[in-house]
Length: 313
Image (cartoon, rainbow, N blue to C red; front, side):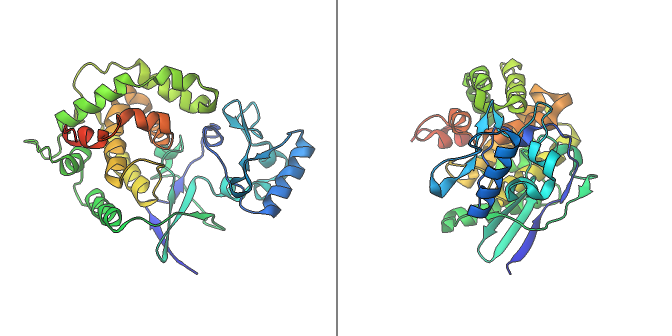
């Protein structure tokens, strides 16, 4: 038995939006699980529900969502056979479990489109059986991760203050968002083909809606921490702590890069959709696992150094 380490609040309130079944790939974890899903697929009229090579079997997607997702956004397996019939990863979502040495960190995925609404007052989640992922970091990355988690968890922490520490760009106000960093991030957001990404079938309806919201925003004026309401900032710090601790990113070079994009994204989401911040920020965080999105924010070789400090290698 490994020691469990709770990452933030384990409360959640499902909005039944269907976004959890879109724009993500669900691994099938055993032959028994695959056999069950194939059998249920045959009963529900879903052809070839499991696809992929032997080492990476996953639920098939169509129309941007899981092949089992009904028109009302709900899971057809769940509706007919109950929760326990679903794949383990689907049953546990939005919980995520990540192995870090001898510890398993457990937390709620902040890229769930309803995560911001229930993290303080939602229903407590039952851990139950967990699918555990994760891999080892280099010594340097592990040290950077520990430093980031300390900064994010300090009393009085702010989005701007942590960004100042990461970029080295000091401001007169300790909680101000570094203007140089934000200007560079805005430049990259404005250059993103967000409408094209949203139009791709693989995006799914919920992610497409938030990306279109970002695309429609005005990125020509300087952004600062004033875009963040207090409740937005509290959730952003909690969400970034989860992203870092649970290692919820794919391919982004360095944990510092992950934190920079996640923190800057909070300001961007608050600017683009102040009255729908939670969903837009979830879309931003989900985008950090989709290569065309995050690669557009970190332009080419040395792009992370330029984004953080305005330097070219």
